[in-house]
Length: 378
Image 1 (cartoon, rainbow, N blue to C red):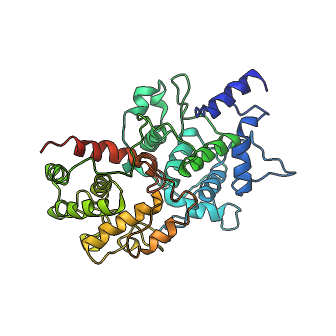
Image 2 (cartoon, rainbow, N blue to C red):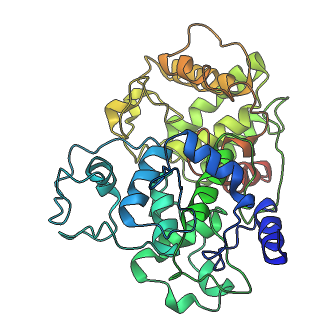
Image 3 (cartoon, rainbow, N blue to C red):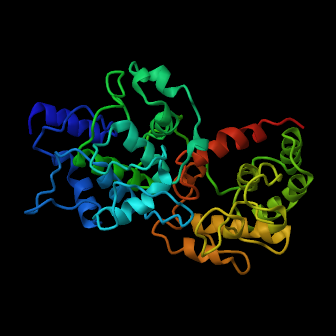
């Protein structure tokens, strides 16, 4: 391996993934694991004679296929977009037909053979992995950190910022190179890193200080302290009242109640239920049904009483941590316990990519809810 390849390999293994013009290289040893994964999963295929064409630039139709297969994206039946340049007989039509719901720009042309830029792929990677523009944390991250920020297309900037925040993509030497093209080896490596992260086998650089907040243990916040915090944040009375039930199940399960109470604040907007879940569903954690296909009201569990809803929250978390449920669990619990990583989540920060697609999810609960709760004076 030559010196350039050694530097690239070190960057990949060190989570740098510096896309800096390696298209012309013939040696892709640094991408072996990623390419093997993509090949075995059918995400990438040869172009003839077994040649995977790793040095070839990625086209938009290839991008659609790779993202749909990698994240098992389902078709949006409500989408009415029809592309005049993609016939139903085209090999990529089934993938584009699913992928079209992510389109940043709506028009009649998909341009299937057009090459994909870094900014475009990173943006659609964010969408396919389950995030959206509302997950943005720092809108200035590109402007502050990269000298070529002015070359980022307006329509991709928010999504690209999320990709940078989540460690999906990085720059080199102060440059993000948003208009550079990607080759197939680079794309496989990027996809593989996100998959490993979602499986809990790789920690991406999220731009936050690393921490480990144990889910198990006695409460480090008093019930009165938690209620005072909720009142200070303008919580609905139902959310303040439910704190007693959280501390009750915390005693029973050994799960820290203040962590789940903080998560409930995030999921229900302090009991105001401003999202798809309705108050009468008594669902304090946004728990989906076993057959959910979207994010509608009916895709979320409904529990008979507020107490049942809190118990379900603890049971659902028990599947992540590896604890026995209390009473008969809800249907979605059984789906979680079958996952390979079920029972392995010990820290709040590990919920990212598991409880929710956002890799920052656990850190968000910690910094925006739990830490202020712990600092509340009574």
